Length: 151
Image 1 (cartoon, rainbow, N blue to C red):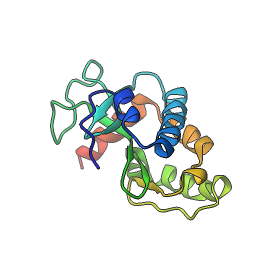
Image 2: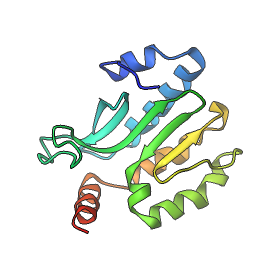
Image 3: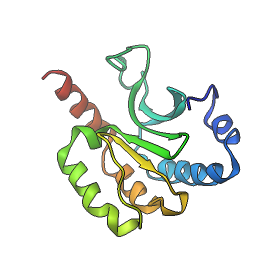
């Protein structure tokens, strides 16, 4: 379910009440733990957190007009999904997250390459997501992104 909302506040205001509460809490956790330099935007119809063009003028290689994406949150039909690009790009971070997840949530981890599907709002591991957000600096993400592009 891609949103046509123009701002994060508009996006959240258009959600059903049960999702709105969880998304507001996720957004707060992300913003409270997001390293310096990343910027909150609407991206691909979701809440996005990116490296702005002022810092990384090249933008995203798939569409250089877009800022370099790092993290996103979306309310989908059957779940709230989070997308963390470094989970896909860094095996050590991925393995850490997979090992930590059961300590924070009763639900089984439902994860793709960079996508984590959170089906029950009561089981969202907010503290773990906050810790995940603080683990990668803007410079680390740019360095990993560029090294992956050169391969």
